[in-house]
Image 1 (cartoon, rainbow, N blue to C red):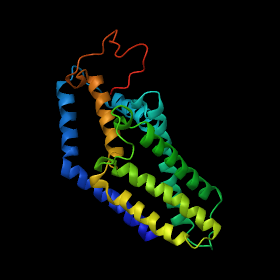
Image 2 (cartoon, helix red, strand yellow; image 1 turned 180 degrees about the vertical axis):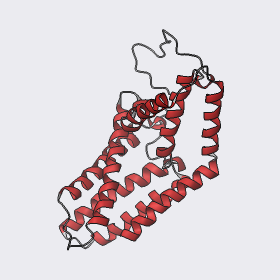
Image 3 (cartoon, rainbow, N blue to C red; image 1 turned 60 degrees about the horizontal axis):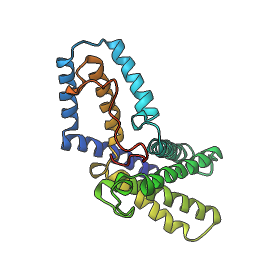
Image 4 (cartoon, rainbow, N blue to C red; image 1 turned 30 degrees about the vertical axis):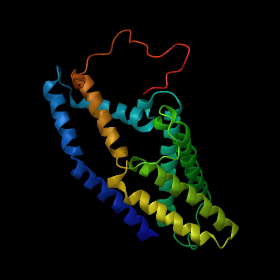
Length: 243
C-alpha cells in the first residue's frame, strides 16, 4: 500500500506537469502576469503582493469565495474538505500505522470515513441538483462527458471506499472484491490528471492571485470598472436560472 500511494502521488505530480506543458498553462499565466505588470497604472510592492497572496489563500483557497453564497459553494466546500481529510488520513494510516504492531488511533479511521462521506454528500449534491447542464439546460443527470471524469472518479473512489470499509468491518467475503474496485477507481482518479479537471485545483489559486494583482495595478484585464448601480437581470418574481 505504501508503494501504491507513492505511485499515485507521482502520477498526480507527473500528470500535472504534463498538463502544464501540453496546454501551455504556465506560459499563458506568466505572459498574462507580465502584461498586468507592464500595463498597470500603478506598481505594487512586495508587501502588498504578499497581502494579496494571503487574501487569495483565505478567500479563494480556504473558503471558495469566488462561488459567492449559495448551494454551489457549500457543495464545493464539503467536497474539498472531505477530499483533504480522506487523502491526508489515508497517507497517515498507510505510512505511520502500516501494521498491527503500530495500532492506529481510532480518530484516524473515523476522520477517513467522515471525509469520504463529505465527498459523497457534496459530490452527489453537485452532480444531481447543481450542475449547470442539469439545472439550467434540462439534461439528464446521468449524461456524462470527458469533463466529468474527475468528479465521477472521485465519487466512485469515495463510495467504493465506504462500501469496502463496511464489508471489511462486517467480515464479509465480498470485501476483497470491493477493495479491488476501490483501488481501480482510485487509480483512475489519480492517473487521469492530464485528461480530467484534477489539476484545476492547482491552477485556480494562481488565476485568482493574478486577478487580484490586475485589479490592484489598475489593468482589470482590460475590463471596465464595476458600475455603481449594476443592471439587474431576470424577473423579480422568478429566481434567475441562466448562467
